[in-house]
Length: 225
Ligand code: AMP
Image (cartoon, rainbow, N blue to C red):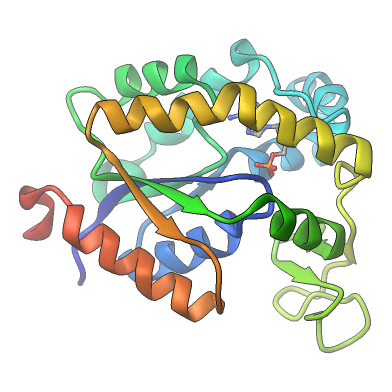
């Protein structure tokens, strides 16, 4: 089996993080951990955490750390991530979350933090046409819909436009990205863990670039795991 890896993929909303993290998780046989998917599952189940998170999510605001960190800590403590690693998608989003993540992982370390780079104009286009399966989270778009009208190819779930893909919420999330997440990119750069990868082009080309970047930057001990 290929060695595992501990990977973070950063990037603006609509940069293709979700799709690429699924692909990386298959390639390296590691869990794909998306805080957005975990929160959406909690909202759907109407758990107390989901009820608390929903109002922030619908407005495009960040869910408070008190809600989020326990959820992420529990997930990272499970056997699959301890054994193989993970591809983290949507977390961390702030320097404070990144510091908490380092503490949660210690003494283990990240292999690589990827900044998936896509210009804002393209991201806006992608978000406007994005559609997603309510059950399994598979992404589609108006130009690449499921085979049968708005029924997920993978699980048969309903494919919809995300409730937070409204113009107002998208604008707010992009502003928050500049304010909170762009400094995080510089923070990882300063700690020598960041690799920029061009997120434009076909999904297969982007995946090839990502795998090359991970293989080049993986810690030497992880290569032989
Ligand atoms: P995503 O699917 O990653 O776009 O996340 C959807 C929404 O979930 C975000 O707009 C936030 O409201 C919330 N969320 C997901 N991850 C985080 C995080 N790391 N910190 C705070 N809020 C988050």
